[in-house]
Image (tube, rainbow, N blue to C red; front, side, top):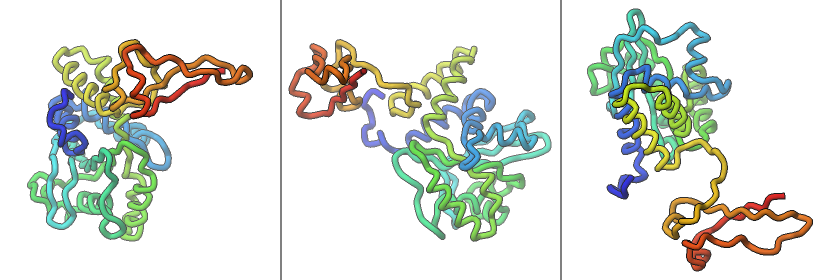
Length: 276
């Protein structure tokens, strides 16, 4: 966030490590579980948490949560993260595929999400991994979660078509979409109620990183302050407010902040909001 490691700025692995690596050291109920349960069913638009509750799966008796980053299968590839939830009576596995700017890799038979679902939903597929924990897992695939910055309905539908063709139609109720903006909202809610000072700092770090990356829900346009600098335009669009009526017609542009030299207009767009 201080301009270090610029070559990693857009790397999804960097974002994965920073966010989920921090969630790993928090108690599950105060970290990764609320984040993952915020993901959305691709057609019914209900959260994974509500979806599981309807089926009587509450995840309240967990004894252990394991994070496995970038485990590799000799046949199916390398999911970004596999989360294993172990309870008194049941255990669940959750593959998480994480994107930042890019889309999923592969199409049709090489579809990335299809490969990861097939790999981790079956005992045969799990045995192809280089991780003994995954090889020996004998529970149920709870959900495959696809994390992106943008909408992904068309990508998920393409994956489901391939899984249908393979006789894995049950995947329609097990593939969920999680936007980075939802991650920010879940982390912010956790941060607001967290009472432990150390945990609160960790959640704040995640929140600040997501804000820095622009991965926050849209809350409206903000007006520029009096200290706006030309360098700010490299990161944020500027919206200037002009209170004019359509009946009177447009007569002038509002004045730029004094700190902003006029020549920046030749380099970056500035958006004008006209209010009736």
